[in-house]
Image 1 (cartoon, rainbow, N blue to C red):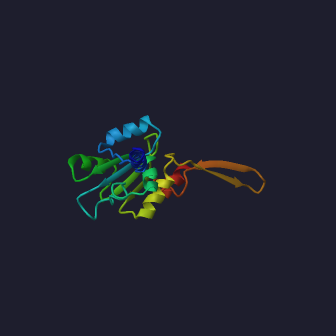
Image 2: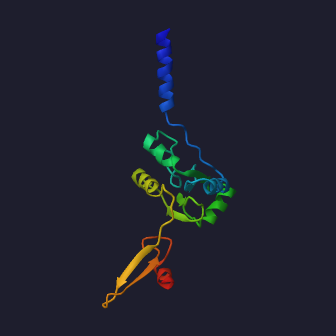
Image 3: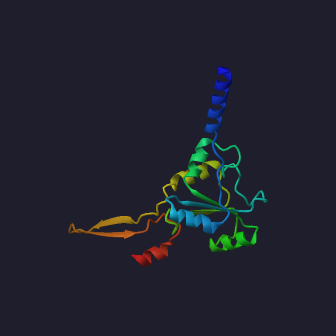
Length: 176
């Protein structure tokens, strides 16, 4: 009797340690609303699941043999996976101005700004590094620049960081 109880407890312990499957929202509007209501950034994947060259690998999405680390990274995001071969998916892709796939975007935790966007496949290390980097969901903060004149006076200005791919250098110069 005691051995059955111990076996049952061991089985429950193993089942509890298995990562739960991740749920991906197929409706971008619902995923964005959940992001705005919560405190997590939104990970958006636009791809063609039926096409080998235009899809994100299922293991990156946590669908196949994902590690605990991958589950931990993905759980920090609201997740939206849209099939661009459908009419709805084409509208969402148009909203993101995505013409090639797969296309991955991360929206800040307020749901108001795209903080990362990439078209094309990512390998596992790049995917993990990207999820790690943007997991806090904060918008990039403006850089603070201080310049000193010969007389010792200083002036301060703020501008978007030059490394932000969302702003072209000409636009940055005009804003200064």
